[in-house]
Image (cartoon, rainbow, N blue to C red; front, top):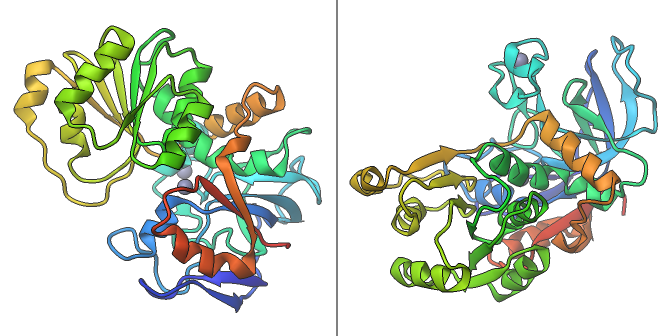
Length: 344
Ligand SMILES: [Zn+2]
Ligand SMILES: [Zn+2]
């Protein structure tokens, strides 16, 4: 098959002929219809603790059609079924797996990050317990957005959010935009968003932000602007950037007893002033990935027409153009989701 392969940090991905994935007994093979480019892929390919080994096919936001079914599977899957999958193949039998939380399985292998080859290719191998059929009426575009939407959904679901809360979302990249859409869905009162890119400010507004504040605004000024816009202060701050100093900034902005939910993934050491958190009795809540139910819920809401994320897709490209586009995206913050269509 054709695949875009990561070989070395700082070098563009290369289009290579790669061996087709082998279907394990409890696995399925998906012919990739679309795969989203994730900020994590861009970041990981530049080196650091998240860097995958040479020879890795990245891509963990994929949808496709079942083309092969493992020997042991007397399941309801048929050749040609449209499917998405959580980007893991886990044991399927431990307590985490049974609860639909394969991220925490101690035998979990991740897809598109080094263990299992990812979706920047024509075919990808997926596990039975992690796979979900795409309901009729849900387009490939939408199905491919389930993964980033599930990240935002998970962050909102594990927070103390209640309908009518006032919130602040830091950053309107794909994860911030996904979080904004769920906060609107679940009935947040004021959704104030901070962002630096003017394109992303526009997208945030389209997806449910009630106010946009420039991302460079100092904490003290931001608190005043928030009060002016909403008459109060945020009950919850959703941090969707994932870079050093952001926790400290959130803690400065946060009012007493509020919660800071860290959805952005930061892989660098960071410092904050704990005494500040003590004097406000703040809660820091970390969020990672999603449960299988976060995927299922997102698909169900799409099927019912209650979640329409189409404006998240800003570009669709063929596999051949991926290496060039991938390099451009490292510096271009005007895009939201760029989708690869390997069949084109
Ligand atoms: Zn991702
Ligand atoms: Zn397990």
